[in-house]
Amino acid sequence: MSRVYDEALASHGLSTAQFAILRHVARAEPVALSRLAEQLVMDRTSLYRAVAPLEAKGWLAVEAGSGRSRLARLTAAGRDVMESAEADWEAVQGKVVDALGTQQWAALRASLADVVALSGAGAPSA
Image (cartoon, rainbow, N blue to C red; front, side, top):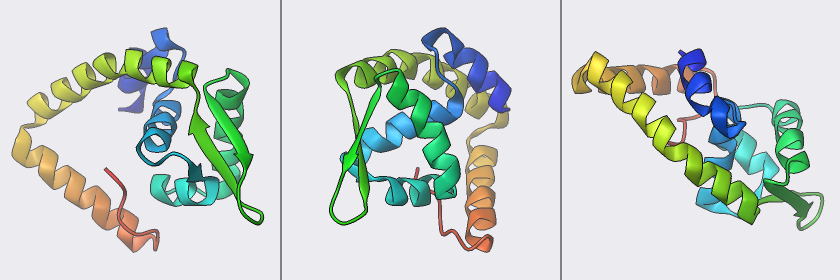
């Protein structure tokens, strides 16, 4: 399934995981990387590896926060690429929901939330 989303986002130079990171940062910026890892249900090391290319492309800025925390913010270029990719992501999302139907889509989301909760990570952020 991720391949379908990745193909839709490829023309923007984004993967599905990168798009998710940009969207989560946009919703809560500035956001501590440790908090972002929790929201994305990722371990911090994996998140840091995923953030590095976004920072290198100039889409994210990571700066020191209080104590040892590091904060992520979208740059103007990051906001632009995220916003330009949203229509393609929405198109794929619409096709998936239409193919499954709203009830099955809701059931799938609920099941995924249950799996995440079982892992001890809590419910995913929508």
